[in-house]
Image 1 (cartoon, helix red, strand yellow):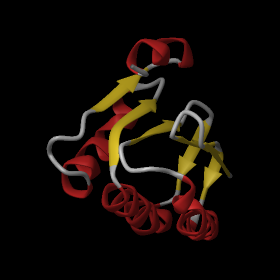
Image 2 (tube, one colour):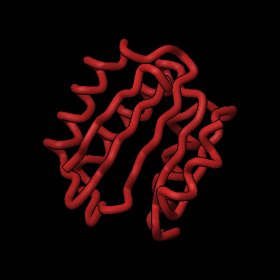
Image 3 (cartoon, one colour):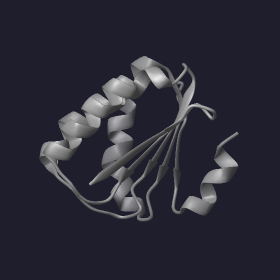
Length: 120
């Protein structure tokens, strides 16, 4: 399951992945982001919360990589991820090196309460 929120005032996109994130959901997320990306200005912040994610289906990965590419092309300036278990971050870190420009900082937090210090 996913939830996509866009805050125009803060120029921020917030993606929450929870429970089981599978291919149909990844396609729906990609389609929704394509439709709504125009609501953001360049240099937006991407916050991705994986706190309640139980399973990231392998079939969803290619579509999620397309989400990453789309955010990169649209001008993301910083990515903040909430990933409670460090080992779960390994695959996303590798994907980040491939799908985001090298100058874009990617910060990983273990909990939502850590995020505020990285929002500046």
